[in-house]
Amino acid sequence: MTTVTSVARNCGVRAQWDFEFGSYSNAVEDTFLCDLLRGSCGCLNPRWLKVSEGAETRRQKRSRVVAKVKKGRKHEYPWPDNLNTNITSEHLTYLSHFNPLSEKLKPVTLPFVKPLIDLEKKIIEVCQMTDDTGLDFSDQIEALEGKYEQALKDLYTQLTPIQRLTVAQHTNRPTVLDHILNITDKWVELHGDRAGYDDPAIVIGIGTIDSRRYMFVGHQKGRSTKENISRNFAMPTPHGYRKALRLMTYADHHGFPIITFIDTPGAYADLKSKELGQGESVAHNLRTLFGPKVPIVRVVTGEGGSGGALAACANKLFMLENSAFYMATLLQPWTYR
Image 1 (cartoon, rainbow, N blue to C red):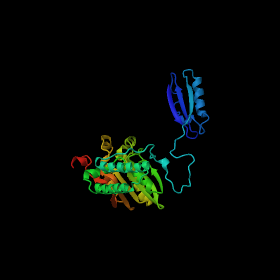
Image 2: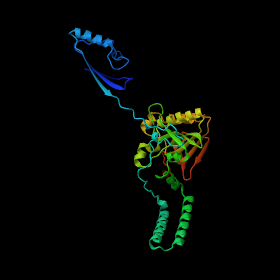
Image 3: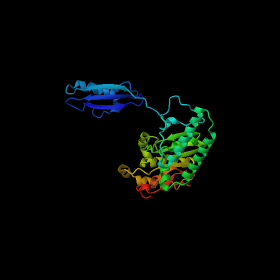
């Protein structure tokens, strides 16, 4: 029994043909599946009927055709059926995997921030006492708030390098898409490296700010453990760098300024990525991005580690407060403090 499965283009159905041959197998010699079906997929080709009749007249040959027709599945497009084509200012969220969190992020307290947490608790207790007793504790609250602001300023102006790095790697730090969705009027995310892969650690899209189009590129970390695993902890593979290079070349062709956001511990250093050309993809990005005519601005929003952060050359480099930019990812910064 030989089974051939084909999909007819014009009717959207799936046909499965089972050929059962007896002692001879030359009854349908030089007859292709495309010859068995007519242009409209409702009837059989006369050539197939003629061959079948000839096979029946010869008793040495026994043939049987069984056709099973199944309805094809509707392709699940990422956009809705009732797409609004007159969008003036909106983020096309259905083309992105970034959705609002169902639960509030759990607070993560760093060790050196605990004195500030104690002051916050005291302020809350005094405010609660004011509500319960009806007494005026405004002077005490004002004094505590002044003390808190001064302690906050002193703490963050005297951070050690390792403490500053800890703040840069904080779990609840805003991600790249948080920044993009807050500064753009319209935003649509683009996908794929045109080789069959789409690295979720790299997010790319076109956004508008004051009616001017920009190409945004960035490393996307997760806001939870599940998201971090799906985003590979913002560590790109070679597919991510090729995806970024493809769309940055597109931006240069159409004259879109490029804004890159850096927040990664480094390129993904597993064996498969090395075999697929991790070093070559980073080097190719470095070489190619010296040539675009459009301005390229790079912003370090969290941590920028190793070649994973270097893979986007820029005309200007900016760093947010309490961010870090370092090269020794394999020798993590806290190992040689």
